[in-house]
Image 1 (cartoon, one colour):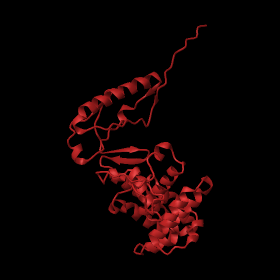
Image 2 (cartoon, helix red, strand yellow; image 1 turned 60 degrees about the vertical axis):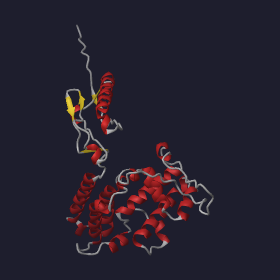
Image 3 (cartoon, rainbow, N blue to C red; image 1 turned 90 degrees about the horizontal axis):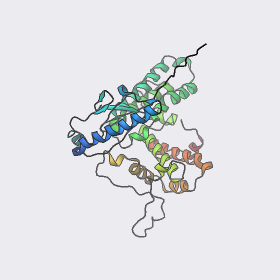
Length: 311
C-alpha cells in the first residue's frame, strides 16, 4: 500500500499593517521609491512566514496642509500587480482619518450610528422604565460618542455639533421630553457632560495617567514639567510645559500640546492632589475630575457628585 502525502501551504492575511513616512512635497519621488522598497521587503518577509498582504484592500492616505498636498502629483504605490492611489479617507481601528485631519467623516458616521440606536429605542420607549432607558442610552449611545474622542480636541464647535445633537436626542429620549424642549436642564438632570467637556475630561485623564506612571512610556515622554526661568510665586504649581507650533490646526491639536494646556487650566487643588494619587486613589481623582467638568458645564453643582458613577 502506497500512501501519497501532499504538502499543503496555508497563507494567512496580515491585517492592520501600517507604514508612516514624513516627507517634503518636493521629495515625493524619493518617498514613493522608499515606500515601494519597504513594501517589497514586507511582502517577501510575509511570504517566508506564510503570511500575505491583501493588495486589493491596501489604502494610501496623504495627510498635510491642503496647499502642500496640492503640490504632490501622481503619487501612487505598486503592491504586486495592484496600483494604489491616494484616498480621501481611510479607516484605522474604527476611526476615519482624512487628509486634513478634520475627522468630518468620523464625526458624521459616529453621529449616524448613535442616532440609529436612539430611533430604535424610541419604538420601545413607552415599555421601558426611565432607569433602564438611561442605561441603554449610556451603553449604546454615550459609549460611541466617547470612543476615541480625544482625537477631536481642538476642532471648532461646529464640527462637534452632530455629536452634541445626538446626545441631545438621547437626553430627550430618557426624559421623555418633547423635541422643542430646552436640553440643557435635561443634561444637567442626567449629569451628562457635553461633548466639548467630555473631550477635555478624556485628555485630562490621559495626562493624569501619563504623569503618574499609569500609561505607556511613549505617552509619558510627551509631558514635561514646566520650569520657569526665574523663581516665581507659582513655581511650586504643578504645571506642564506646553510646546508651541506654527500650525494651530495641526500642531496645537497634538497631545503633547493640547494635554498640557487643558491640564494647566484645571484648578490648582485638583492638579496638586493628582500628583499624590496612587492606583488606589485613581478612581477618586476621576470622580473629582468629572465633578469639575460638571460644574464647568452647568454650574451650581455640589461636591457630593463625586460619589456618583460616571455614565
